[in-house]
Length: 389
View (tube, rainbow, N blue to C red):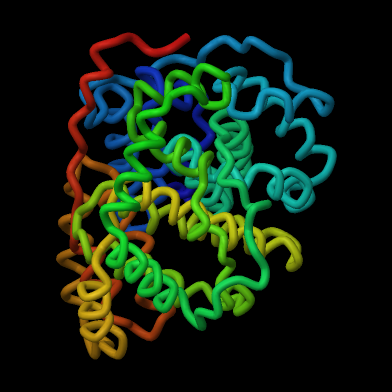
């Protein structure tokens, strides 16, 4: 009980802003959930939290709350979506509405409008909400909704075509898309580089200028804003209401480039989207998966490349039927390594994939993927400039 008290106290903390040095996300609470879930004692989790606040792996400390520019209410909450402003007023708004409606009704009313923007802040707002729901923590969920509004950048699910591709599984969809890249790799890479060279959406106010400083977030928002026909063929498997094949495909995609910082986020954000979807009415869950799939494709395409079909097919042959007999010792080592990592994305990866491993009947792909750690990326030269206002 005392351990839970400490964890709840950390998740309820309001000392720091949701971002620092412009658009970098405050991941401290995500790490708290992952470390606690991996069995780290509460005192050590608190020590990690305090150390992270003083100096993150990027070399900057967390920052105090930023003043709000707007008072957010029921009439204007849509108006400021993606404006990267008034985070704390968004928190106050969703806090009031939750007290009136309850959390499930709050999610049902506002979640569908926010989920198209799930890739905003490089998926971290969605992670904040979904992982809060996983942890059963009310205030962190309020923050997550506010952060999703603050950093919203739509993936345009309204463009989805139904019926679309006849793919029976997410793995079939990945193989089909990899085949499309194999057939026209130069053309698709040229398409990506062309739209990324066009910054007119920033000038028109469609993309916040801070995302240009990020580089990565601009690429994702620009790619999803422009869109490509390959994004919108709604696969047949979306009707299955089965998340494990999607975890399998995303984990295999990660293993095609083990340790890739971008692809790792697709694993940890899938866990978040699932947690959100499970709290929505049944008729809204399908749309959550549609949003995730479009956002995944936009994220991968934005890098100007896609794993070859031959590599994905070879990995699939290795892992499709491979199940661990006994690997508790293997997980003990992976968890032990993860909790030593200063880069908090690694314990998050392990936390998610160990759960999926258990519920999937111990499919070995999840243990193998969990051991592929990432490193904090170098910040781009754009960080020589101060954050956008």
